[in-house]
Image 1 (tube, one colour):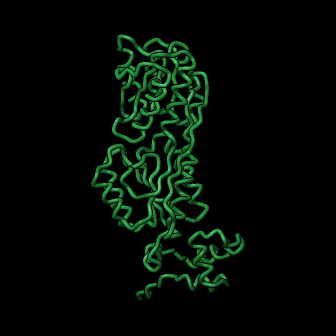
Image 2 (cartoon, rainbow, N blue to C red; image 1 turned 30 degrees about the vertical axis):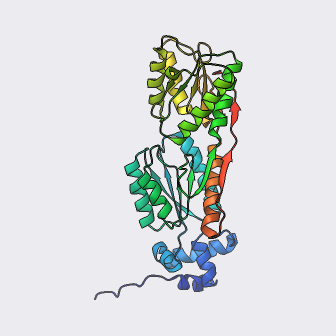
Length: 337
């Protein structure tokens, strides 16, 4: 004889079984931090015993909101973004949000696909680290969506949004000034994608530092590349072929700097002795690299926390005042310069 189909366990049944109100049970499935640990354990025990499964999509439709946040970054393998994500996760976990992560690998097409997917899944908010060459079409689309979002790391000036970043021109200035104070006059700027806002702003600081010191701004010492270790390797090979090569190198990022130092060693040069090197970001491995890397700290974890907190404010307060948070960089001097 065919057994009757077992109905789906409801939240009301869970609440009755645990001896709490339905509203309390609802707060627990949404990870609200206000509920005591004892009550949380009791309700979770009832859920397991009854076989309750939280229907998140239905809940979102009922409330016309979502406790899922979409995060779109350019490269998960880049340690900077790993640190950024730790900051985002720490902040969002405190307020009970679930994170949906997407990686664009700096592709406009992939970025557009991820935006569509996350909006289709009705995320309650978005944190977007834009690709280097975001199109006007992407900018127009972002200005039209109703979902709260925050831009981070790279800025799109035409987008009406909150933004969290670092003072990139100042970071480049303090890096180049450090090399100038060590007596260098031929200072290269290697790596990064020329069209990106982060490259443009670093270049601004680089030029200003050289000009203020009365040094020539030599275009042949500015070589852009993919923001990867391989990009740094290619860029340093090019600049070493210069008839008048640099005595010091300011790198777009630590990842570029690691490739640059590898390239120098392949050419029989010792980083920090034959050529001074300064990176940008201060990722954890910079301190234990050989030699330890002098770099500009851009505080990626703090940047992630600030972006997450801004998004949370925007999601819970429709009248949230738009903010632009710019962190101040710090030069960390080590053995590479």
